[in-house]
Image (cartoon, rainbow, N blue to C red; front, side):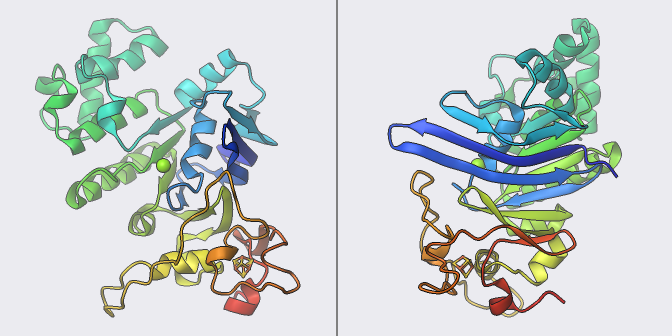
Length: 331
Ligand code: SF4
Ligand code: MG
């Protein structure tokens, strides 16, 4: 079936005094109805920036956004005027962030802020908007919504504030919800509750969910497919089951090995080195300075030749010259 969102060869660069910061370098993915795509990577991999570009919340300049297209139900957002973008994106695609406290306005009640979505986009009266706010607070399982609709953000716990932000994001029935590290600031129990809520809401609404995270546990719990990002590029894609059980890129393998295996009590083996500064991305394969399998000199030479993201199976892509030599052919 038709994807709701198609990101096609997206680039986002920033002009800075340090030079060109190449945050996103030719990223493509699709999200269909009811599907959850996880974008997995360390901080500084460009995963948030690609979402911010889609949401139109990057300042241009310094950001320069190009690509073959960002199509929402087949319509290219990148070629729209600002007003067309506002009409499509406002109700169609919404986003929640890691830090609910700074995303919410401290001087307005949560009910007012949720209701603002209805007043602004649906022209509702204050009274009706407040009623809808209570409904939404119920929907995101905030207890005693009716008596709490007039409370201010600081009167809620971190987990409940995150629910308020989810309520605002859901107000206009988006077809795509982008969640950028939605639970990173929360403690483990609350994290699990918020992820469960997102899953339930997705089931109820059929929206497509893009989950941006560095947390492999979260990916494993909720995502259908995963795109692993490194230095602004996708280096591996596949279903979560496939990628987790048989990674085909050395970076993905490194991520898997850096998670403690509680069953066998294996020791943690973090990936040696740091992700690159996006103003100085290494030539050739960007991962080569950290890669235990790199060949240089060689043919291809990992320090010189850029590996293309290539198909190795249905829905399965990898960008490594030596994937087959290192990991074998896909079964
Ligand atoms: Fe490692 Fe070379 Fe593959 Fe890059 S292309 S991941 S350096 S083996
Ligand atoms: Mg981020």
